[in-house]
Length: 299
Image (cartoon, rainbow, N blue to C red; front, side, top):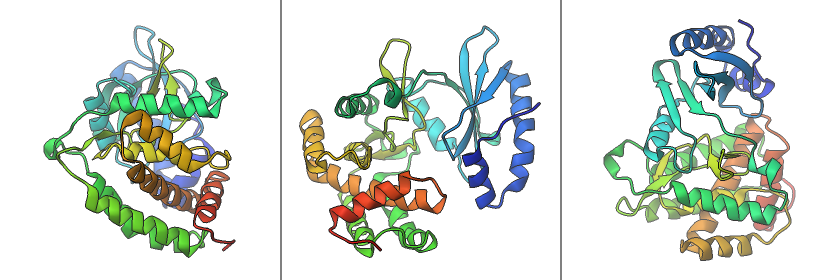
């Protein structure tokens, strides 16, 4: 079968030196289509961590087949989707973790394309994030918010250097300080299932007109971790991010300082990572905002 691999997926895989995967993935999709009774359609563009293909089930139901690229284990995502049970996130229909494959409910257009008002989008993102939160214990198998902060702190300085130091040292230092504070603040007793990457392109319209999230990173963390991704969203929108944070805190009862610090973490780490894989102009926009917020000049 002929399978179109989007350019961003191809660049990510080539950057990691996994050329063989590009030759083998069509065979994986073909095998899964036979086993699961799927009619394969076209590939979706836009992502970089997984190949996503439109499919139909035997009864004609539309779905999507997602194949993780090398080094991007979809096991945690599958667990998060099972825990969510279709509430606030796309429903998981089938999985084959040996082949890094997930079969998912197909949703509609992203919120970014449907809702013109960015302030309204922020409100809707908050609503869909809250729907997904549910208590999860330490034994559930998801990594914690403390682990997320530790991983980011361990990786950020080297990634920043490898990416050509695309933002100021002050912005990196600010993010590292926030990571340490959120690591210490983690409490297993109050942790919830969080999506981890809530933004307008990850929120797709469901058949009832509501929105569901796709691509959960899957953590058990404080709710502020999700709200921080909403603070990070829309770099360059021009609104007052402190006011945005306060509005999210007022709507949810979550501590504004925690939201702000997670917003800083997501902004700087995502920006540096995006620059490292050439995902532009998103990376540059995030880091320009990060530099502005710490009062740094060009670096």
